[in-house]
Image (cartoon, rainbow, N blue to C red; front, side, top):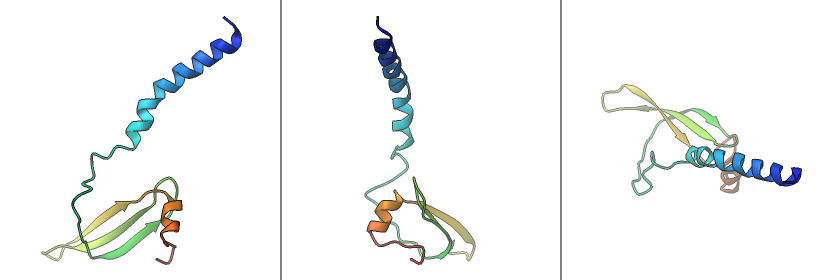
Length: 88
């Protein structure tokens, strides 16, 4: 077996070994894409960064207690294309 072919097979084996971990990183089990939730609150933090942007805000519940909510977005490029800025 040539050295180049051995390296190819090793790289292929290595790639298949990590494929499930990479795919699992972007699971959607925690999201209900059908249900819409409306929340009003005060923005505590906005993080526009790759690979995932996020917004954290404080929301008062019916008892008046403040709860911290966090929402994770997709890529920064997608947010910018939708008009998001640091001043949004």
